[in-house]
Amino acid sequence: MTSTAPAATVDRKAAGPGTSLLVTDQGMTTIATTVVRRIAGMAAREVSGVHELGGGAARALGALRERVPGASASAGQGVSVEVGEKQAAIDLRVVVDYGVPIPAVARAIRANAIAAVEDMTGLEVVEVNIAVEDVHLPEDNGERAAVSRVR
Image (cartoon, rainbow, N blue to C red):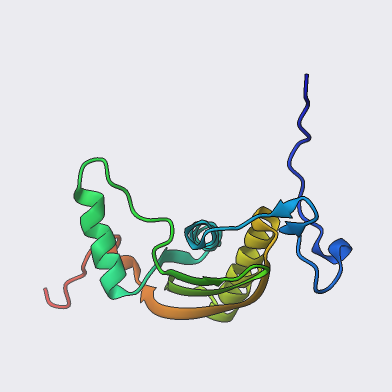
C-alpha cells in the first residue's frame, strides 16, 4: 500500500538560486504553455477589482463562445506566456472595475499570478506585465438606470 503526501507549497528559496525544481536526478518535468496560461488567468481573476481579462476582440470572441451550448470562456483569455525549462514570463490584459486604484490592483494581480504559477508549477516567474485595456463602468451592464436630463 502506498501513501501520498498532501500537496505543499513550493519553497523556491530553499531550492537555491539558479536551481530548478523541475529538473532532478530522476528526470525532467515539462509544463505546457497552456497550463501556465490557465493558472495565471485564474489567479488574475481572483483579484478584487478585476472585471475580466482580455482586450476588446478577445472579450467579443469570449462573449460569442459563451452563447454556444456547452462552450465556456477560456481561462487563458487575455493571458500570454513564455515558458522555458526553469522560468516563465506572463503578459496579462485586464479590464478593471471603475473606482478601484489601478496600481494597487496591478500589484495584487502580479503577486497572485506569481504565487500561483510558482507554487503550482515550480517555474520561476521572472516578470508579469499588466496592460489595463479598459475600465468597466456600472452602466456598461445596465446596472444603473438611465436618468433623464429633461422632464
